[in-house]
Image 1 (cartoon, rainbow, N blue to C red):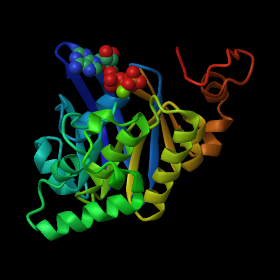
Image 2 (image 1 turned 90 degrees about the horizontal axis):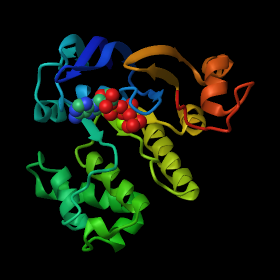
Image 3 (image 1 turned 45 degrees about the vertical axis):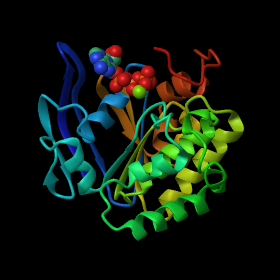
Length: 246
Ligand SMILES: Nc1ncnc2c1ncn2[C@@H]1O[C@H](COP(=O)(O)OP(=O)(O)OP(=O)(O)O)[C@@H](O)[C@H]1O
Ligand SMILES: [Mg+2]
């Protein structure tokens, strides 16, 4: 469904991605793992057209999308939930959802989709008229995901959905991601919550300084000593760190 080949993305003169190739098959949940600054968000931003790659190609359902603008890519069926949620804090929950459905001409469809979101996350219905910025981190994450789902994307890009949430809410968010996946949404998930992410993912890529250096299934990645040591806090270099700092 999605195929990146040799993607190189720059911010000015800074090269953030050094030839990234990866693939997501239809119906899969694929995760990208990596330390702070490795380039995880840049991969998602490059796919959704927020930044343009200097080299390489991106195909989505056999069409080249790496030269398309963000709106065209949304129309193709790619939804992006950015890091730190980035909802419109001054707008209400309902207004945020309406923004998410901006490409839909049919008002009834917009309302049907909104009802679906409320069924999925009843708390959003209660908070419907509340300013989104006043909600808790977990509620804002639910809203950010719901906003992206308004257009029923074929592929959902999720950038660290568990960031800054309490352990209980992290469980909730992962349960939600799993449900979405089970319901047939293809998902590319960026996470630092390695254990949780790999448990629900079909396949994982590990990124270091803009390069994919390992990939495999949960079991395959867990066999890699480096992954166990540096991400899961096991082995001789155990620093009890759950997040790779190196
Ligand atoms: N707008 C920008 N301008 C200049 N450099 C940037 C910009 N955004 C990211 N970078 C740089 O590109 C590299 C990759 O950043 P990116 O945000 O993709 O990393 P990340 O893996 O998502 O990190 P984190 O886990 O902290 O979210 C970093 O070195 C970062 O400093
Ligand atoms: Mg990031």
